[in-house]
Image: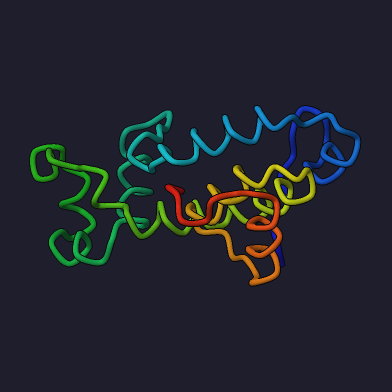
Length: 141
């Protein structure tokens, strides 16, 4: 089932249909989504954050560290974005899909194309519609 995104104006789908969401909003969300990573997450307790990090870390990280070792800042001082790439990509895809649909509904094809680059699934018909609107599908995403 597709996720629905809640905005300050209610569900994204309804906000789009009421013209409460602008193309600028979709572009800002796409830009923010490009930079989101689990490494930026925080928790009220460091041990909770590290426990979550361990659960969402790439398999190579979990192969290197035992859960109790991961709790030690001395043993895991070099935590980085690459440790969470699989999780970050999956979350990006989940969020990009409803945003892509919203961009298509609002005929913001540039934003829709960016959401494809962020992992949203599209159909051939959608790409043809974007191309027919004048969007350069060979350009950067």
